[in-house]
Each structure stands twice: as structure tokens, then as C-alpha cells.
Amino acid sequence: MNWVKNVLKKYWNLMLGQTTIDEKVVETYNDVKDKVEDVIEDVQERVEAVKTELNDVKEAVKEVVNQAEDVVEAATRKKKRKGRPKGSKNKKH
Image (cartoon, rainbow, N blue to C red; front, side):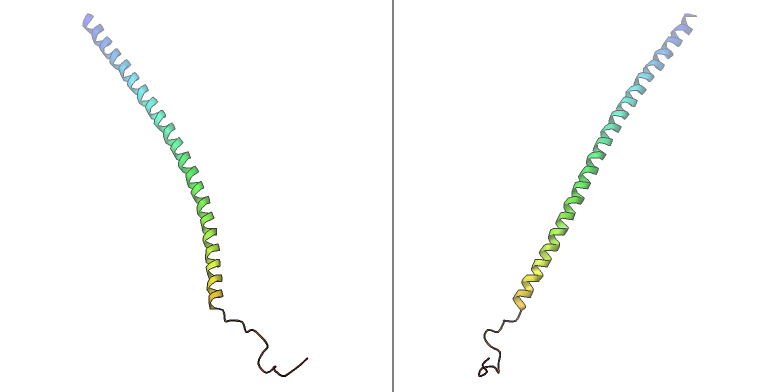
């Protein structure tokens, strides 16, 4: 009878020990899950911030392109004639 009692006590302690390990595993899992959720939220916020900044850069680049086109147009524009048009030298109004 003593042997059965010792075996049952041994298995009881083994089962009790398993429960502690399981609880530790569950606690660790929950901690990791919370940390991962925090990281996901942080990454999503960063993605939104990057999207906003990229839109700002896109608008700025469009403005630079427009200004560059204006510079090219100004550089290639023909010189304006100064003075009176040809053929009107002797005419008086």
C-alpha cells in the first residue's frame, strides 16, 4: 500500500509540475503576443507616416518639374524685338 501511495504522490507532483510549466508557457505566449501586437501597431503608424511624407515628396517633385519646364521655356524663348516693327519707319501717326 505504501508503494501505491508513493507512486500516486510521484505522479501527482509530476502533474502539478506540468501545470506550472504550462502556465509559464501560456504566460510567456501572452507576453510575446502583446509585444507583437505593440510592434504591429507601431509599424502601421510608421507606414502611415511614410505614406504621408511620400505624398508630400510627390507634390514637391511635381512642382520642381513644373519649374524646370518654365526655365527651359524661358531659355528657349525667342528674343523680343525692341523698337518699331519693320516698314513703319517713315509713317507718322
